Image (cartoon, rainbow, N blue to C red; front, top):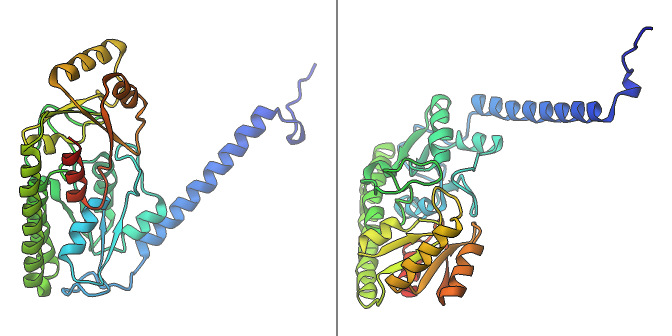
Length: 310
């Protein structure tokens, strides 16, 4: 008896579905390759070798907090674009092919350098984005040790921008890089940087005054993002997450006992993360729940909100 293979009109449903998925994947792949090819041969209107930061200048930043810093140091009219949108995850975010095209239109790309997607995407982009200046501001910060979550090395807390002293250091490093890229604007960039740093230092003084009267020096937090903030002002951060995972029942019991011993009164949660565990703990312990946005544009305002909540 001869066994005949099914004709195209009589393929099993599972095989048909598999072929459809494969074709869909190929279409997406071709679309991505087409966009990347456009990026490779694209000649943007902005002159990447222009030494004046005029209205044609385009700077891309990896996260929103860096946009404010660049805008404060660059002349008005320069275009600043943010790679990762609000609510994105630095551990899982991947730029779209269209974003990669836009990235290559920039004269400069400014990142923190400590985030997962920066260490993968930007390293690849440096090999193909010719004429684009890349700078990572986190290189100028002494990393905070004792943290290990979301795949980061245990010697590095990636949230270096959530500290006003750190922001001052990063602003100075950015000003130096911008002055090299736009030498015709160097004096104005330095002047703007001095003004920006002075404002950060003034807010830092206000934060110290605010926290001097704080009853409890400890706080609970869903995701351990305020390590530098705690270090700057002599506070104690108690994180619910460990390695990006929810705590076990035994760990929950330890956390609750620790919070009672430390007289914790506040728990910080994030809009972009699940906060059910934190809110349940807050209900049991009578804690004040405060929403924190680590990727907010206005870092000083966000840190002041955190200080007032303690």
